[in-house]
Length: 385
Image (cartoon, rainbow, N blue to C red; front, side, top):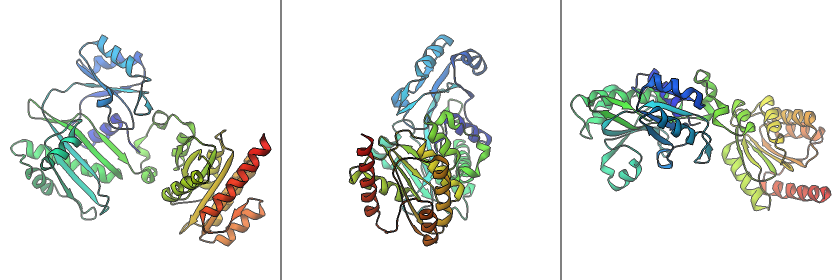
């Protein structure tokens, strides 16, 4: 889950990373008092869970209160990157002589954190790095051993950083790594890290993307889900620890694991159907979680059929089956519902579902299950005419 910039900066500031003074607001009425606290000139920054705001004019600057009001008014409720702007960050404008880039992410091949540093930052850092790869250096780390301050110092020195800036910037990169590990992040980024005329670094932008599966470990973050998602079902799914994405079809899809769920949605399309959603349960299926997953998908009034595709490795499939039955007994839906379930204690799970009258496919091939689902769907649609 990508945090809003003001959320990331709160974490950065608490960790000792210097950030500009700023406050988020949701309405124009709060702007005058906020500008008074921050002081002019200010940056007006759309708060979105995506990157690329600057190129989409999601970041504006104002020298007067009138300009700040005008820029805020034009940003609130604007659509940027497929997201509606619900709040803006009012922040002091920092004048700088240099821009650096600091980042940490997961290396896709080795699965370990990788540090990145460049003495060229800003919105075009990716294009600059492609044209001049020597300006961006990276280093893999051993998360079990940890990362020492002297290692980061040598890392920054290798790109030519020296003088008073060397310890200041390397200290910030080391603290960024500590945030990355502590927050179970998949991305922690400062772009740009501005260097003021006085030679002081300041993180004027902050990106922190936390592993969705680790969110339950961080209730202290107090993330505002209603500001983050516009879909009420997605908000409730996130609160339940479920990954949900609304699609444009009418066939509900629930799967255990992202890969299986994506493949299932693709097969529904291959057989002529249109998935209404992507919902995956994650790795810890329980009776309550499965019940909640079914309830969430069936809340969508567009649903004309539901396909549940589960594979139990370590997850006990009888618990999943009982959760499905509980949800269906509570909601009594009149649409076709089909469950394909294999794996851990599958025979017991099949019996639970079949005794409750829930159609089950015992075949391991999802294609056969989807073909049966589409037959049920077509019969249901014809009967509804």
